[in-house]
Image 1 (tube, helix red, strand yellow):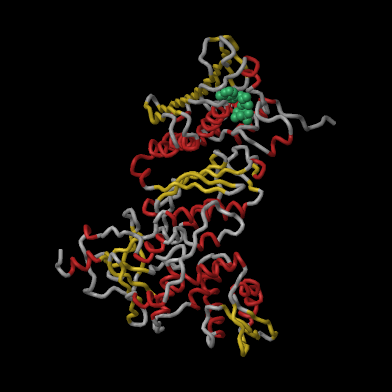
Image 2: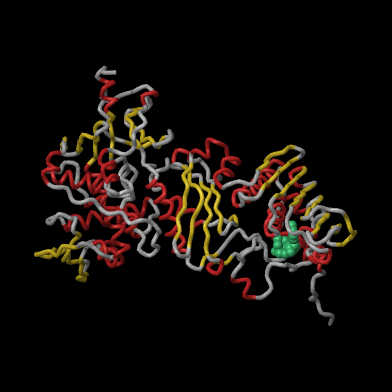
Length: 615
Ligand code: ADP
Ligand code: MG
């Protein structure tokens, strides 16, 4: 019997493979740009017609190719970028698969003009659906120019798959933008249907950002620059008030290759914890640099996805780097009592630059601080007296950040904690508790009001998270261990959480028959409350588990903080109040509680003056 299996003709094989490498016009543009960058181009011109469906031309002033190479380049698996199998473990170029030109040539008519600086005449190659139609000497500048005509002309299904011209052009623009962001030192001219869309001169990364996104956006970002022995993160993160409704304005690069990675995306987002209005996403342009041996970029032909050897390390690094940057840049919200006319129940938590995050603040005295006109929005000198004095004493970076990172060792100077204040000084500070709920304190710029419960919640929350990292719980042994009978489900839950509860400071023994014995409790729990705290903690944990998909430890930290914190109604003495305020401002985010409620409200003295008609 005749055998039925045969090897595909190269032309057919190429056409099939082309579908993976060049899915649309934008992927062809991206591949050509990557080749120009790999050839060390300093200036690149991209010209498209009909959103790349008629013409895509990429011209560069890079190394160029010899005549021999110019022909070879169109063969499948022809590359100058890697040779040995080991090279695959350590990719340092954007291309390496040797597929792009072969794929493009399989589904389009291609004209290549190229010259190296060693040669006086260049080479012209014309290829039509993988067949060489013309090969000649030509005059050409040093570099390479590739014209791709009628992409997908011989794959109608693929051509029909293309979206509207507008969408295709948007995708191309996005591809050019990404590359231009990652390579600010390279000039890019981008022309669509005879209209020049970009003309970017070689620049610094900050200037490139400005050129691409405009003055306003560029003023709304903070520079990120963090590195440790293995990783570095550089770029820009948007101020929270520049956050967008969609994720579009997020540019992530790994070793200057644009990538898609959910974990890193999540890490950045998490770092903004509660700084963003619900449903908005931060703007960012971030380039992560890692030893190419620690990452695999050969996951998919489009090279968009990567696999890290140690993803959780990368996650932690990015999270901490962004969080530290945000905290160090005074991005903490400034409060102004702007009670929107629409809803008296809602106060607005205002961030530095002008955007708003809506937070429900249940208590706004009717007829009290109501309805200042919009120009009353006092731009707060963000940092209250407390913080200012801490800054003077060298506590520029909340110490909790350095604690968070035992393994990453972010390069930074280690801040020293201020000396504990002498009691007389503390006594001299004007501080009051009202309604056993709020703490009032005079600060240089006005009046500070702190919600004691949420303040304590924030403190405990960070403490617990750092306990999880450092496993140094402060636990107090109980003189009289408490026996507690739980529901079967709760008993099981305690069993599951036992290790983490221990890190939290709970010393619990499982006694069988749904009974646990509490022998020790976290240092922050008031003795006498132990059974109730544990039960409340479990209830809160289950509630959170149901509501939000939190990680186990995040959930435990939130639940514990919520339940163990001092409550509204607890009377505090002066030194307790002072200690609370001190600890609050030593946290990474003193202004919002882990649930997103405001912790601190400042009433500027000008506001009081205005209300009393003093201005
Ligand atoms: P890869 O980039 O994965 O090596 P390509 O098919 O994209 O594969 O390109 C094949 C080869 O052609 C490259 O390895 C490179 O040597 C050469 N080449 C492609 N484009 C250019 C260019 N713009 N300038 C110089 N050489 C190029
Ligand atoms: Mg390539």
